[in-house]
Length: 18
Image 1 (cartoon, rainbow, N blue to C red):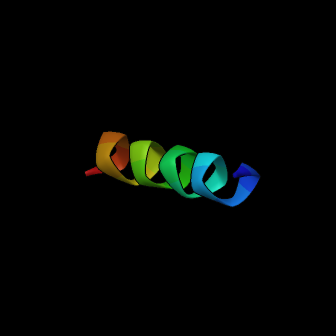
Image 2 (tube, rainbow, N blue to C red):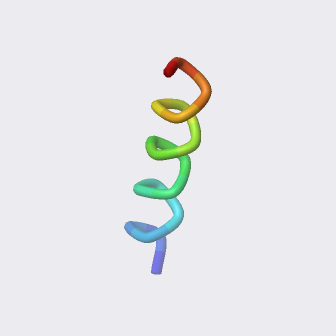
Image 3 (spheres, helix red, strand yellow):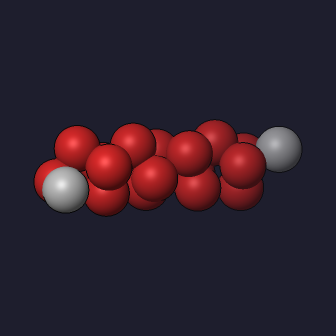
């Protein structure tokens, strides 16, 4: 599931920005 991987990447980036 490439979509899951992409979502995870976005989540990590968002969490790091917080």
